[in-house]
Image (cartoon, rainbow, N blue to C red; front, side):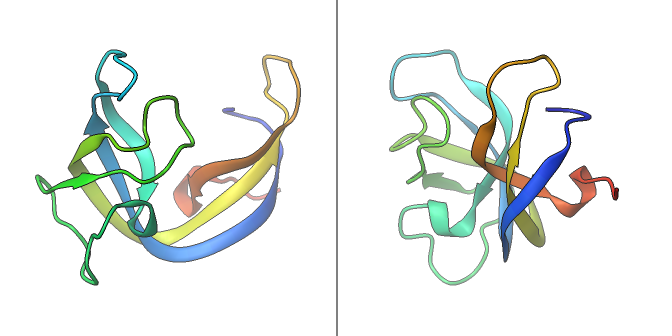
Length: 108
C-alpha cells in the first residue's frame, strides 16, 4: 500500500484507535493494528476510549476481527478515509479499504 496512488471514496470525522487483539479465528495476536474507529466498537458509549481500555470490535475488515476483544493502544481524533488503490506490489485493485488517516496520505 505504501506509495500507492489512492482514490478517496469516503471521509469521516471520528476517533480512530490503534488496537491489539487476538483474532476470533485462532490466529496470532495482532498488535497495534491501525485503525478501528469508534463506530466499529460494540457499545463504546459517546465518549472516546482511552489507552488501556478494552472493547469488543464490531468490524470485519480483517480476518478474525469481528467479535474480538481489543485493548486500545492509542487514540487519535482525526478524519479517516476509505480508499481504493492498486497495490504497488501488483495484484487487483483494493476497494473500500478501511482506514487511512490524513497523516498517512501524501498530496498529489
